[in-house]
Structure formats: structure tokens, C-alpha cells
Length: 136
Image (cartoon, rainbow, N blue to C red):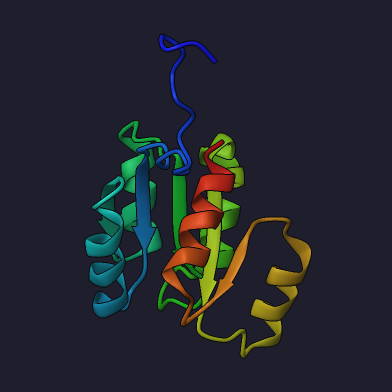
């Protein structure tokens, strides 16, 4: 190594800053995720599937989408099916969050999809690593 060679860094590279969408009907979860993730990413918050579909219809696209499975009205599985028709390119970028797949329908849905899945509550570092892997 010569004096002009750069010194290798022992610190890991910072995560790539992305544009994330958080879809969760629980305001506490939604806002908390927004605050935590805003340090490293641009974050858009949405309280329902229809609101997310409106964003997509308006042309919004995201590097990663965090979507609750159990929501009133349009739940995660219904949103997934609507996204398959409207924005299929966004499906692989979706991580499904659940506080428990209590219904047979939710269990069946989570069993058939290949998307990342996280059980609430989860560790921030696990979420961070999952996002980094998804946004490579």
C-alpha cells in the first residue's frame, strides 16, 4: 500500500436511501415506522389499501412497501390482488407485516406468496436488513 492508496473503511456502507411506502391502519404503528425510517429514507404514510392504490394511480412508485396484512376494508391480500393488476412491478417490493395471521384466509395468503414477511413486533435492525436486501 502506498501513501496515496485509500485506506479501506471498516464501517459498513450506509444503506441506500430509498422511497418507502408504509400502509397500516394502526396510526401508532404507521407513524412510528415513519419516524424511525425517515432517518434513512423518504417515507410516505398511508392508512388504507384504497389510499395506496390512489398513490399508484397518480404515478407514485416505491423502492419498498411495508404493508399490514390485517386492515379493515381492503386488507393486505386484497391490496396484493389489486396491485397485481394495477402495478405488478411493485409486488416484489412489498413486505407484509402482521401482528398475527389469525384467520385461515390470512394464513393461506402468507403461505402462498413469496414476499418478505415480518411478525410484529420486530426489531428495527431486522427491518433495516430486510429493506437493504430488498433494495439492492
